[in-house]
Every structure is written in C-alpha cells, then in structure tokens.
Amino acid sequence: MSILLNKYLLTTAAFIVWLVFFDSNNLLIRNRLQNKLDGLNQEKQFYLNEIKKDSALNQGLINDSSAIEKFAREKYLMKKDNEDLYLVIDTTEDQHP
Image 1 (spheres, rainbow, N blue to C red):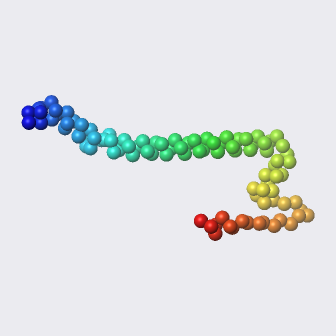
Image 2 (tube, rainbow, N blue to C red):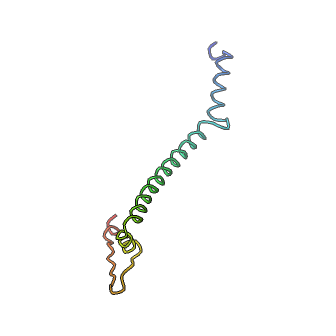
Image 3 (tube, rainbow, N blue to C red):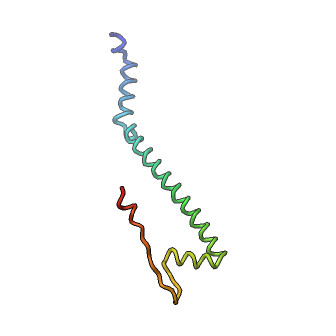
C-alpha cells in the first residue's frame, strides 16, 4: 500500500499520463504527424521517379528525331496528311473488376 502512495511514483505516473494524453505534442498527435510524413515521403519518391522517367524521355526526344514523330503519334494522336487514324480502345479491363 505504501508503494501506491509513494510521492515519487505518483509524480512520475502523473507526468507520463500528462505526456501521453494532454501535452501539445502527445503520442496521438506525434503518431498522426509521423503517418503524414511517411505519406509525404512516399509521394516525394513517386515524383522523383517520375522526374527521372520524364528526363530520360526528354533526352531521347532531343537526340532522336524519329522518336519525336513516334511520341507525337502515340501521345497526341497526330497523323500524316495522307493517313487515316483508327483508335482501338480495350475496355475488357473495365468489365472485369
């Protein structure tokens, strides 16, 4: 019984409860912020990878004129004057979840 009434133990327990639940930087807020930071780091890594892919594509387009034509035909559906363009759209993926 004297251990439960020990002033040092009670002070330490109250301090821990204060830090865990009531402090402005409590564990719940810190956990939420850590999750947000992890998400932002993943997003940063995604955009860095996209920048690398786009830089490689850009270098390829600068160095090769036939790549420019291929890119314009595939990405922007451009065609030559004496050509007809037919689009084939695959919708089977949408039908099967």
